[in-house]
Length: 512
Image 1 (cartoon, rainbow, N blue to C red):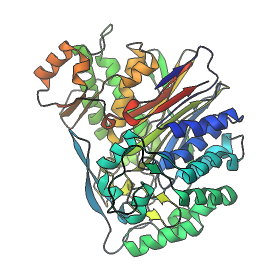
Image 2 (image 1 turned 90 degrees about the horizontal axis):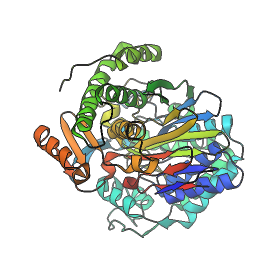
Image 3 (image 1 turned 90 degrees about the vertical axis):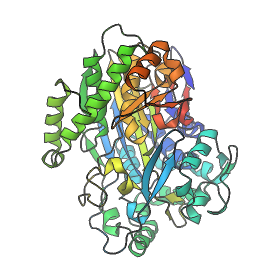
Image 4 (image 1 turned 135 degrees about the horizontal axis):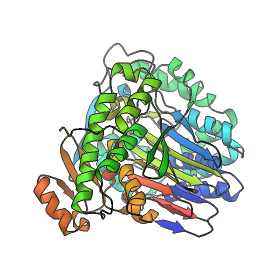
């Protein structure tokens, strides 16, 4: 869905109609983009429960006109010690249709969450309205509920083993218990325990989550149930302000998440390879376009391997320097549930924020309605193997909230989609800048994803006959997807006078 206006006052793009509504209520009440983003994130915990939770993590970019953007890292953090004894950690298969993906869940998959700390840090620096006013829309939504949409119902089918992992978890997703049938589109979804928790959060602040009863119950269950998390992990968690990664694509300037996150690096590497390989005046879907996309995806994955060296990962400065050397260097070719919020308040302040709960661990903090993350069970976050994570370290997220400056125009975008985030964003950037698409077309154009030699092609029939001939000649074994699918991410973006939300994930956009 896309909205546009030549004199847009504010622009919102999120993963759900109710998430957008929460932001809109705050903006219309005089709040700024940060106020609206906080309200939207809290509402997303109710409306998008498999993608967003206070038990997860995130990244945000914030920019005030005339100032350089700032990055806020509130992603999940590894525990300070490992559990000694039997771990509650096991695999499940997410079934996307033409493709599947393995995830690991259980108490042993939970990392230290950062969303509560992040939202409060964001508000403390840039917010203008009381936190109690920002919590209101989500509190009402949690108690009154909403109708489950088709995309959310499909997501429950994909991750059904997690939905059924426990009775409290099943109730968060609208089931009476773990044995009940999955809800259909239109079913009522609410979370009254979460509404009560939010009221307490408005009164007590983040200490309620990191030092209060919720923290004690979470860590007690972790100790007894085969998890790594301890009370010291929660008490010592801090959100971190960082200098964003900055690079150029054609005649535009881009900013995204810096190290220790890997998402911004991967988008920058993919776009730099596209700039190298995509010939001028190439049309969308032409063989040269597909060839350039595939080369960019392969090379950026190879470059990531070069960056994932222990001596580089230990130093943000070294990682930035290595990236700077690789991004412009010609290369030889060798062979997570997430949601995003983009808001520009039309008064100078803008926020791009990506939030994730992984695929969720299956565990809910008692009496809170808060479903915890499974970040220690995400393969893309644990490249050296499960249980080999360094202690007390920020996990290297694939999230990449991004800001683009093209002259006086500003675009904000980001995506969900685990290891498809980088390819989704690189393609939307290319659509906007190289093919001059409007924002809605750029977001909803069909996509490719190439990883470990396996190519996935969305809506092959929409690429045109030349593209289909090229695919047949070069990637005969490609997986083809007959319809747009949330496997290929969910890019929600705002521009100078428009907003576009990705239909693949039931997104919703609004413009005033």
